[in-house]
Image (cartoon, rainbow, N blue to C red; front, side, top):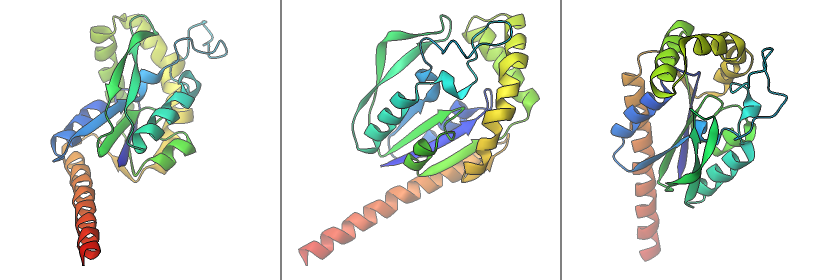
Length: 215
């Protein structure tokens, strides 16, 4: 069982990149979104100067549950992933069943932040996209999908998104097996080819073991 980590800033295109990889893999692939693991109630210490919650800090996530669920998937166990409501900024009571497929993509802004999490991953990827492009993508997403106003998106960007990216997120690049730029089609096909190669190698090894046992 393989876990592929896809890291990158908000608006870098992690979900889109993951979808491109999945389309080029010849077996079933599950995807785990780190955004689902936001704490329902962020710590009171994670407040900006204006009193707003800081959702772009590593401590805004439920790390024990992330590690538990990734470890379960690694062992071939099914999990119930939380579902986060970005309009109300809280978790829903319902959950989402994630099956332990042979490959699981784990995407999120801090998917390479914790060493214990990185050790569970077989391949690590970082999407490096210029700040202006990430901001524009985030602006459209938050207004169209999450019911935010233009002013609130801009304020959040300057208060937390930009400084947290520089302090915590960008340094994760050092832990990536490879870094992807704005053009993701080729990179996605390369990663998918590697994943397919792992599948076929595993199949050949298993076949070899069976043959040896029968002999």
